[in-house]
Amino acid sequence: MPEISPPLSEPLDVLVVGSGVAGLSCAVRLATLERARVGILTKGSLTQSTTRFAQGGIAAVLPGDEDSTDSHLADTLAAGAGLCDEAAVRVLVDEGPSRVTELIALGAVFDRLPSGVLERALEGGHSSPRILHAGGTATGAEVERALVQAVEETAASLLEHWFALDLLVEEGRCRGVVALDPAGARAEVRAGAVVLACGGAGQLYSVTTNPDEATGDGIAMALRAGVAVADLEFIQFHPTALHHPAMPRPLISEALRGHGAILRTAEGERFVDELAPRDVVSRAIARELTRSGTDHVYLDCTGIEAFSSRFPTIAVALGTAGLDPAREWLPVAPAAHYLCGGVLTDLDGRTSLPGLLAAGEVACTGVHGANRLASNSLLEGLVFGARASEAVSSGRLERAETGVFAPAAVPLRAFGELAPAPAPVRGALRAGEARRRLQAEMSADAGVVRDAASLDAAAKVVAEIETGFGRPSSVEEAEVSNLCLIGRALLEAAAARRESRGAHTRADFPERSETYRARLVFGRQQSDG
Image 1 (tube, rainbow, N blue to C red):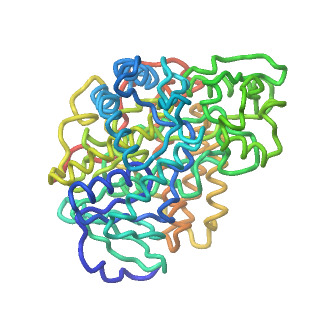
Image 2: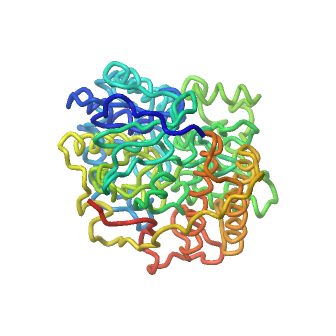
Image 3: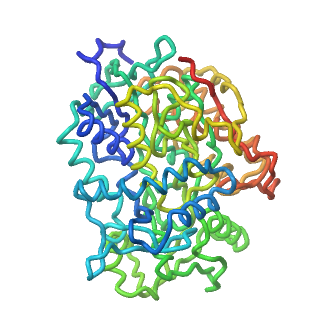
């Protein structure tokens, strides 16, 4: 890899790494309300992010609704299986309506009834219909469109097709990132503050709803820098991804089950409450697949009227696959979908490293606990992206004793630093081969259901793959190195959590244990500033 080139000509006020809902909403707010000099660094184009794949919608209780924010809070806490930070959830449900209103003011268009009232849908784990959609199941794409348009009008520096390699840490503070520019040269991008908003790590698995870009780069950078990271064992599997060779797997939205779609075995039997939280439905499908010896179950949507007009995005995907939801059941199976953990933050997005903030899927705000409630992810990005912007604009860059960092009912249990990666072996696996092998192993042994033996087997394979990489010489190798590092941390945490809770299911420890009602933390929990 080339030597580091001279830094960009002038430091930014804030650098946002990532171009999903959290990063863009943070950047727009800083640039328009605070007049800050904002840069956005993203490894693809501005419109390439996991946000655009989000079908489910945005959960929010708006003024005048018969629903209540207390009910939304209770549903979120129930889904999180005892690991949510209640203060963070309260922030989410109370501030979410204002953030949604701001998004509409930016031009986002949500589905409405003929009367003009915003249409609401019911999804798994919610006690009331409170989900806003755009274009039926194109919510993420519409949110991304509105935010990208606003960012293009306000951001000072758009660094597209740049790849962030590592955090730039000087005298105990984050001062920017070291990155690869589009030509492959290393460069320093300096900033007064850095906001990580670069998504999750769905590409750890061979069957995923996440795009190729979801390689956990922000979390890996944090792990290497010793920044506190937690809850990596809680990978949420979406229960109803289309069983089809396409990758990322087409998502068959929870909204269909909210409109009456039924999960059936090959024999036509209904076997689970379709509107239970995602972890419950995914485990039920996994049990059925083991029982039947098959690799998919079926979603019966034949009772949904006007399917194509109500869910046009899904209808197009199904048509491409040669499926007609009005006449035949849809083959579905769980797919890796969302990482509930990430870089630990306080209630304003600040991390254990002064000058570094995080928001969106890369972060662990405490909102999701052990299992994310459906349609809370876009809302979390809007709310905590905005809070991170306010912390930056006020100059408050060292974390506070709030949120997951506050002494609370869910304590932080330290793991310390991750052991160094195994020494590289010259001439080992190529990046593409290594990535496929890693994904296959994680899917086989660290999926919906794990046990001690499977986790140990996966750890050995990950260590073997890691020996194939020294200092990465390309973006592809850097992505595989990042995935291996996160995979190793996930496996270590999953092996240590000897219970079943939320999205983490251990066949050898099937019950929930109060002993493990804690966050398992890698890195330093204390601010060094």
